[in-house]
Length: 401
Length: 235
Ligand SMILES: Nc1ncnc2c1ncn2[C@@H]1O[C@H](COP(=O)(O)OP(=O)(O)OP(=O)(O)O)[C@@H](O)[C@H]1O
Ligand SMILES: [Mg+2]
Image (tube, rainbow over the protein chains, first blue to last red):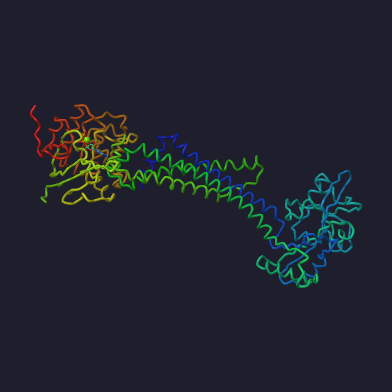
């Protein structure tokens, strides 16, 4: 193969600009679709990652068994935290929180929010950071202090988004009052389906349990394993400690549920990646169809240039020369189509982001996949017409008009 | 086999097979010897198999049976594309009635094409192509495309193409068939000249005036050579 053959292939393509463009169109659409789709898929993955940013992969969440609540038979309590920490081998920290929805008002503004009664170490475990003010302490918890730390949505709704104006103010929760001592940064995340960090009002655990929350309260423990490697051991250990703490006999079922954060995140991620794979397959089919288009065009080209093929053979062109000549044309076709498709795809991505309101992430992987796929399509679908051309009988070819 | 024998055909048969499987015999037991440096003319009735014979000589067709020796080597049984392409490329130059130039390439590119297939580097093949075009009086037509050339000029480009790899044999199938008398004569002068410089030329024609340029005429009828040294009737 030489530069001259490349030049001849390009000339042949230029000789039929409209046809060349039309056959490229399929590749362009296919490649830009792949890029858009991979971008959207990567965006969905990114969404998942963002959503669970505050949930450490080493965390294990302990919930009541289904159908139970604190007021009935639940055995989970803040006491368990102490039991866990004095018996653990693979666990780093543990915390307990109760939560319930209550009517909250300040001045004329009023709405239903989640009251989240948490131990002071919850803030660290969940990566919650102050904007202004301070967090409550162990002492506040022991004293059942009437203090509150606000999530960003609360500040938005009750204090017009001004954190400074919230500090020192008194809000009404049900019939009780609480003093605002701090506000939190926006996280934009949730802890699975259990709660949204931004939509919660954080108050000391004992305050919530003893004087604020009534019936319908949920309790939850958050436990961090020492590290990712021991998460399974920690999971098992936690189950044993809790069974023993709750005096469960061997034939009794657990009175709690354990959720592994890794598996919650994993499930969400695999949903996102399933979507990516699905969409990419659709795009791949588009590319495949465009390959059939290329094959069609190459057959027409070969038919049109039969005489030329006969001449090439008569003057000493080998089958491999002729094969290469036509194959080059389809490869160039698909490479140029691929490059244009990449450009179009990159241009589409921001539009998708804007008009479809989706997170998209332009990925190198998408470009690589799309481009190599288009080249493969060019080779694969160009090969058969080129092979037919190379195997034409020279005399028959020369005789054709 | 004597030194000066270039081509030797013995009992050549060639049949076409129609798509329904019926065999159509075209050449029916044909013997031919061509000496080195000979200018052989093939004449005969239309449909008598002249082109078929020339295509066999040019290794464009496989034989149905018989033997084909070139320079003492049996090439009639060669079927592999690489060797056949080599023979067509290096040992034989083909000239067609309809010129068969690539219409989108310049004269220079057309002439250089066989050298491209031979693998010679660009500057070498184009230099050589330009030299041959010049020797055929086309120095100011080098960058013209076939559509910008007269028939006679196109045929000269085609002859230049057949010469670019310096083959021993030139095969020409009615090279003047599409030309007017004057251009036809010019082309024949070129062939005569090449023949004098040592090229072996085998040419098909049905024009007696053109046939006179040859050293010897063979006459084909119904798939056989009925005369190995045909004499044109005196005018
Ligand atoms: N592919 C083919 N299949 C069947 N028959 C064919 C085929 N090619 C040629 N023939 C037949 O072979 C015969 C010889 O053809 P050829 O072209 O060799 O004749 P020719 O002597 O060159 O004639 P002309 O002077 O008209 O060019 C013709 O009768 C033609 O119909
Ligand atoms: Mg003929």
